[in-house]
Length: 321
Figure 1 (cartoon, helix red, strand yellow):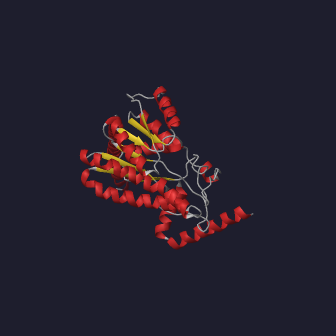
Figure 2: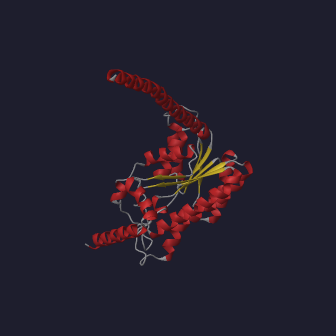
Figure 3: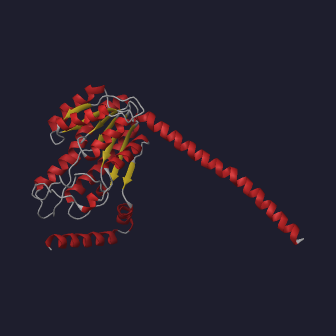
């Protein structure tokens, strides 16, 4: 009887395992098919799409230009330095590392902090291909300083570049998107758009404002089928900290350790491409600690505030020692 029972158990185990294996393989197959379809849809979405990138002359903007160009997008590259934009255009046109049809990029030179220039630039942007499919608000400036020493003019400068400029350009291009009932607005924000760290007040404030504005825009544009994506990277190894403004408006000129150890702009650009292609709404591109800090700020604010106060004390001490 015992042997018979053991035999029945083994037979049942064998039958069960044989039933589970096809199910597991089926799930893996369905998942693989889903990912494949997702990649195909992403490529189709971006191929021949008119993509406007601000701040395209350096850093993340320059790398975004490369990956979107390689994806077959029709680029309109924007920035303040016409010579740098033309150099990037030549570099892209000479590139052979793509398997899709590419298009010669257009360039539009203007300053985001100049409201009058934005109006003229919008008309020029629309003349390039007749419409805009994707607007990537990437241009920005960073800041380092104590609140008590920072002039209001510096606060305004950071807000003009990081907030008022991008929303002015977005508002100027929205009517054409609404008319077509098609478009995608992307805001390159920051982890500091979700949490604030000491000695970055003006920058964090501008990115918090960016997050709030584009969250509202997303809700209001849903009826017009216009996508809105906010991307919040952590530290990226660019010249952002070198070009940051300080409390008195001068240039910081220092490559922070955290920035030097940040992710490469090329890697982040690929993540931006994927987020846009998948039409994601809110994306955090940070390491484990910054990502945890966002949740800590929500779930245990008292602990988060204590940690930030401790960080402020350490930074202040390191600067005075």
